[in-house]
Amino acid sequence: MIELPDLVAGALAAGTLSAFALGGGLARSRRRQNRQLAEIAALRTRLDGTARAFTAEVEHLATQRVPAAARQVAHPHLAVPGPLQPLTAGTPLGIALENAVLALQSEAAAQRTRIDAAAQAGMRGAVREIQAALYRLQDALRGLQQRYDDPELAQTLFRLDHENEQSLRRAQVAAVVCGAWVGLAREESHLVDAVTGGQARLAGYQRVQVHNHLEPGTALVSHAVEPVAVIVAELLDNALRHSAPDTDVVVSLEHVHHGVCVTVDDAGLGMTHDERERAQRLVAGDDPILLTDLGDPPRMGLAAIGRLTRQFDLSVDLSSASPYGGVRAVLRVDSHLLSRLDPADRPPAASAPRTTRTTRTTRRTAPDRAAAPTPAHAYGTEAGAPEAPPGHREPQDDEGDGLPQRRRRTRTAAPAPAAAAPARSPARRPEDAAAALGALQSGTAAARAAAGDPGDSPRPHAAADHTDRNNDIDHIDHIDDEGGAAR
Image (cartoon, rainbow, N blue to C red; front, side):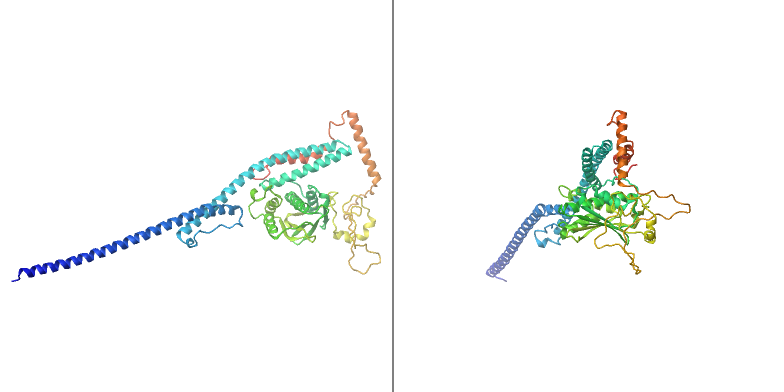
């Protein structure tokens, strides 16, 4: 039987052990709680840091990256800053922010294109009205030129007509850049006439020297005449503007393997590498044309060339320098845009430079040239031919060594048909032409005096001279929105 003191001692020992065990558990629980509190504090601190970093990244996106991305739409050479924290790149957050930048750029580019298209449509309509008014003014000026004979008034009217022609060219270029049709529909014409026609639309056209090395009769198909004239005019305008006023701009017309090349050389300042690359991109017509990319004020010449080269399958190259230190521009017209006209039936304009080439028929019939007199106004005759270049000399009779000899360009009569051809009339002398012109002027003056109103009605041929211009006005008034002629 256990005694009472032993039981008490055992109970006390068990209580002590229980107290120690309970104290150890409480200590462990407190340490665990302290660790959890520390972890919670660390997580809270980390979360606060992440929130601050995310806020800073969003602020960097709004203040730096988004404006730079919007500017890059108009200026591709500008760079867009990356994330504020380099470690963000490649993470879900970094990918999401980059997608936001790309979506912004895509929408900005689309809106910019839509806004520019609306501006071009409005400008296209305004330019149509301006073109029609300028054509009416030109028609009135040419009517006055036909009506009055006073030399001083005629010179004044000529200068006004030329100024009006330059305004027409600028309006036409603006319309082409805005997507309108080139405007005028012409019949097949000699290529040299298209070149000189573009030259005549410019201020300072006297500085342009055209060297025609084409075969006689080289012409353009009808739908390529006006585009070639516009392109040549813009290339010449750039050459004249960027070269000294005491220098010449040289134009050469040459046959090449796939067609004809019109080469424009100036003695200006030239272009830097970046300027040349930008100009080549514009004239190639591959990139979309936006008015906001053309500067202030907009420089539309090269942009108009790009539109026309793409529409009419032409080619312009600005990648080389001219031998005079300036810029060389080469317009290539492929064979499918070329035609041929008989220079006897439809000769080029009297002011067009005569070709330096001779046909095979001319070379075969050279000994018979003296037997067939040619009129003084015939195409390619000696009277109308330019002087021989330095170093050129006529072949002598004793040069019979069998080698090819260079001769002046002349025109011979066409082969006679089976029936006898009528004899040619002899060439008129300058005195006879002057007398005929004086008689014509006297007759018109007498007719006006007899009519009693010298300034009321135009000359009989004035209406015929103005028919084409009136058709041009109607054509401009009826151009549809897509740039095609309605008639």
